[in-house]
Length: 116
Image 1 (cartoon, one colour):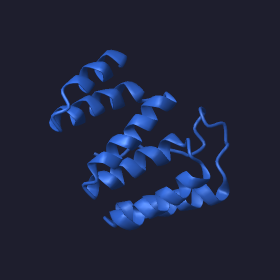
Image 2: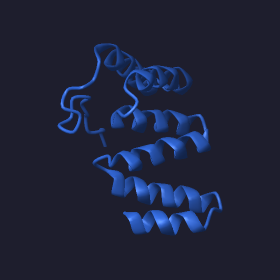
Image 3: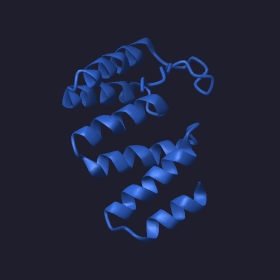
Image 4: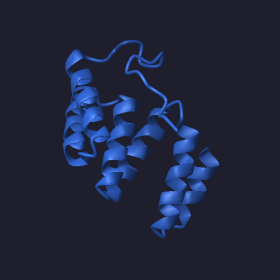
């Protein structure tokens, strides 16, 4: 199944993305598609530095960290997304609950599922 294309200029962002941030984000997407997760993470981190509340960059950085098996960083990015009220935060709360459950953090999943 092909991934649904996303745009940095989503209605929630109202076009507030810098060109430099968009370039780093795009380079990160290309690198991630080429299975170069470490380099992709670097590009997403640069984009995030320039635009710290960009939900698309946070999401894709979490994916890069997931490929790199950096679980704590994945959780950090997902928590930031939920705190931003990203359009898909209910699904993220569910994913976080599963992640915490897999890590044996039993109390946190219930809080996240109730928030979803």
